Amino acid sequence: MNAIIVSALLGVVMMFSGIIVKNRSYHTVIAAGGLLLLLLANLLNSYGIWVIKVDTHNMFNFEQFGMYFNTIAIAATLIYVLLSGKAVEKIGSYSADYYALIFFVLCGVSILSAFNSLLILFLGIEILTIPLYILTGADKRNLKSNEASLKYFLMGCFSTGIMLMGVTLIYGGTGSFILGESKVPESALMPKTSFLEIAGMILLFVSMCFKVSAAPFHFWTPDVYDGAPGVFTSFMATIVKAAGFIAFVRLFDQHTELLGPSWKILLSFVIIATLLVGNITAVFQQSVKRMLAYSSIAQAGFMLFSLYGANDLAREGILLYSVAYSLATIGIFAVLIKMKDYTFEGFNGLAKTQPVLALSTAICLLSLAGIPLTAGFFAKYYMLASAVKAGGSLWLVVIAVLFAAVSVYYYFRVIQAMYFKDGEPETEEITGPFKLGLLVVAALVILVGIFPSLVLNWFYF
Amino acid sequence: MPIQYYIYLCLTLFSIGIIGVLTRRNAIIVFMCVELMLNAVNLLLVAFSKMHHATAAVGNTATTTGIEGQLFVFFIMVVAAAEVSVGLAIIVMMYRNTHSVDINFLNRLKN
Image (cartoon, rainbow over all chains, first blue to last red; front, side, top):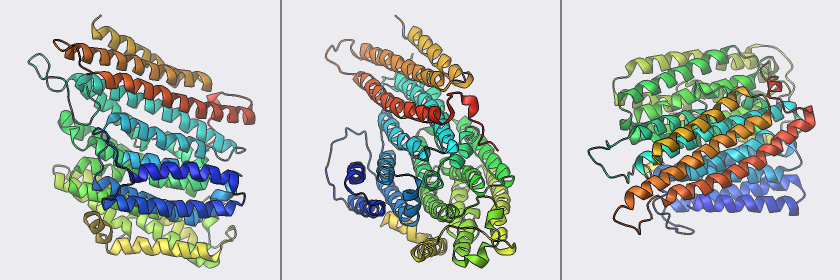
């Protein structure tokens, strides 16, 4: 609750600070301060201290899992703002408004991590995505940014329409928006689950696949991630995507038995399609930014295993995955937006001119590929272990491991370009604090990779 | 009127909306089709709300069952209005740069 209220208020504060404070670099400082405040408020909440206690009539369920995810999301945003704040200021003359929108997105994130009613799910998704349409089109003069924004907007509205139809059909079947509650009296004529509810669940599943860009509903992702300004792609691909998965997991944790065995078949089809499309298409990309967009689809395929497993291991795994994936992707994008040329050739010889950048990028890429001693390894391990524990799906795990091996190819292409090719990469000015921040991110990636319990024990206090 | 009639009507409207989104090439018309989808949902929500109310009201006239369906409609209207304001701004921004609202234009990111 604290996170929802404080982030919404901070969004308003940011908008006013855009009018009062003219110096743009102060906006970043204010945003970072606000994020610290938000982090504090959320931590207090998880220790049982509430800013305001509201009776939500069971529409919210503030459990430890959701609050811990909030902590991860806010901390990741803080790292993101500290690393890429300068780039946000450069996009346009409205940097305070961009930060305000980021705070509103965080409000949506904290709603999604706590919803218990389909109404709140709908509101959370909308509060999350509407600011993103604006952020995607933030670069107003750039046609690619315009196009990405319009495409994201139309696809987002379309999937919202499908989601609402699903919610309505579930309401028709159960008479309630609360998850897992049914007000319709059971009788001999009416079976416990009506076909309306099942049809609604499938429509909800489709629309959530749209939101987290799982194949075959992924087609908007590469264009939008490619066209949006690099800084905001970094935000969209990490924190927003992880929040989408948290909502997905919370939504489909308990009610999958309604769909019976066909649920696992449906889900394994989506997982295989997502891994296939993401990994195979990423191999053929020329631009690193576009490769990362496809790799985010491939990573979504791994995150879907948390739905497949649907046990404690899966819940721990999705938190660990959010940490590992967010840290690594934020690190890589921070370097990418400093480059003048986004193609693989643009990275040629980076290790000679900027050894610190090259080293931290390499560590983040290794983490995305899931090499041991980096955070990505244990994240993938927990995901696959949860599927093995759920039983009966060893073949799916084998396929996932094979695709992880494919992913090593395109991640290593960047490392190869940086270390083993000669060239004169053009970068923007690199400052000392930026290098330090990158090293901290890389160190965190390795630290979580060696001691994943650091993240997970905190979950249980 | 039986609830089936409402369901058929709403699903027809919803399908018209989906087909419009997938086939039309003008951004504004695509947008109108999305609104049609949302309004089909609104109508269905109200119909279901009435249905649940009528089922629960047998022998108990003071029941408030089904009220949340009507409330949801208001939320959808508000959110749709917010979406319209952002969406039209995006379409205007694109029109300023390209002097067209044709979706076929949206293919230069492919390469």
